[in-house]
Length: 416
Ligand SMILES: *[C@@H]1O[C@H](CO)[C@@H](O)[C@H](O)[C@H]1NC(C)=O
Ligand SMILES: *[C@@H]1O[C@H](CO)[C@@H](O)[C@H](O)[C@H]1NC(C)=O
Ligand SMILES: *[C@@H]1O[C@H](CO)[C@@H](O)[C@H](O)[C@H]1NC(C)=O
Ligand SMILES: *[C@@H]1O[C@H](CO)[C@@H](O)[C@H](O)[C@H]1NC(C)=O
Ligand SMILES: *[C@@H]1O[C@H](CO)[C@@H](O)[C@H](O)[C@H]1NC(C)=O
Ligand SMILES: *[C@@H]1O[C@H](CO)[C@@H](O)[C@H](O)[C@H]1NC(C)=O
Ligand SMILES: *[C@@H]1O[C@H](CO)[C@@H](O)[C@H](O)[C@H]1NC(C)=O
Ligand SMILES: *[C@@H]1O[C@H](CO)[C@@H](O)[C@H](O)[C@H]1NC(C)=O
Ligand SMILES: *[C@@H]1O[C@H](CO)[C@@H](O)[C@H](O)[C@H]1NC(C)=O
Image (cartoon, rainbow, N blue to C red):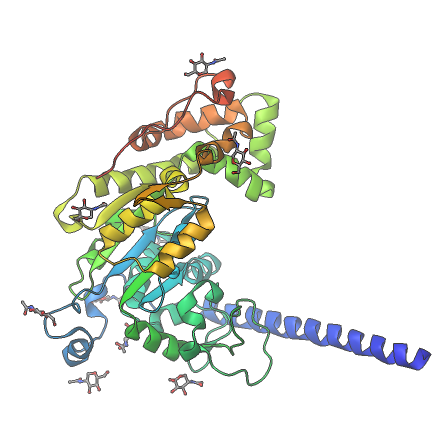
């Protein structure tokens, strides 16, 4: 009897050790590859813009037909900042079904690689890399993204694509290679057992889909995307998702509590140093969002019918109506699959073709007011004022108003 237990315990210990080893090995190889990439920074020439990416015309014709983009094919960029519900809105498209290729934050790899090797690269260069990687991905070409994946893919196969499982198309049967031997995969498919991701297969699956959607919280300025939007091979539509910056701060203080110790102590101890770096960063973020939105709403020729602004608060209150508007804007017909998913996950109801939602969801939307100290709300209003005005977020002038449920901070506003 005792022997039996001893054997079981030894087995468990052995399993634990194997798992740990696996981790250690992959961590060591991570380190090695990082060192390698730092010694040889990603070759990049900012003057070589999109046009010079080496596609030959016969190849392009074979995919896109003789006259540019294939009829009806859409390329949607969902552009947001963190804590604006962009993962949720991304699902509206991810759940669309068979004709959709959805990617969740592919630029995560680019940002990470650049922040590691920042000694070699110029910060202002990252925006062009973001743009070029997006352009390649919209064309189903993963080769540029591959250069940023760490550890580097072998034979175009990687176990490390960020949040692979968040993209339905990357876990479909056709993209699911058999499991040959066990490799630890942090981002493995949940719906079926697949081996590491073969990016050649991903690219083929992408080409076979009709529409492509990429969600990103890493593009800061809309104007950096101009040549992407103007690429004749693409039919790009941009959806910018925004939210009340006071609510974003409140939400971030909960989600990333460790990073917001300073804010918490300011709230308790009196004055907020308006010159502080963190406050400056908040101001910079707000300005980027506003400048991008102003550009989009001003409808320059290159963005005509290609830009849409959506507020988080409106999606939370009228999810089905907003989803329908977004789909209408993109020109992609919404499938019943997407509709069902939204109904199921938002408790929206659909009666007589009129979309409504639970009556008290507007209460949910304003819940942050109970958690943010008034002093911090004031700081946000000070540095993000013009942004809040543009999007229709009302100012609050006292703690009493902050907590007064009859006072709505949301103006009803239409953005064309
Ligand atoms: C970058 O590309 C441009 C145009 O192709 C070329 O003129 C220039 O010499 C290149 N710069 C470097 C550093 O390679
Ligand atoms: C993918 O992009 C790379 C880098 O721009 C390019 O060299 C390659 O030809 C492209 N592949 C295809 C199939 O177009
Ligand atoms: C164009 O590219 C395709 C596929 O990449 C290749 O098979 C073909 O030979 C190329 N044609 C020319 C003229 O370079
Ligand atoms: C472009 O191609 C589409 C489909 O391939 C076709 O319906 C359309 O007539 C073409 N337009 C022009 C101007 O050739
Ligand atoms: C980075 O780029 C900016 C503007 O393009 C330039 O002024 C600056 O000197 C560059 N810095 C480095 C370290 O190359
Ligand atoms: C990846 O998929 C492609 C296309 O199906 C295949 O030709 C290639 O052999 C695969 N690569 C590996 C390493 O299995
Ligand atoms: C759908 O889009 C068309 C044209 O873009 C517009 O005229 C129509 O009002 C839109 N419908 C809805 C419900 O937004
Ligand atoms: C809000 O909705 C929930 C769930 O439907 C319900 O239980 C609750 O009573 C509602 N609250 C108010 C104030 O209407
Ligand atoms: C709460 O707000 C409403 C609407 O603005 C206002 O009429 C009411 O006087 C406020 N109540 C308090 C206690 O401030």
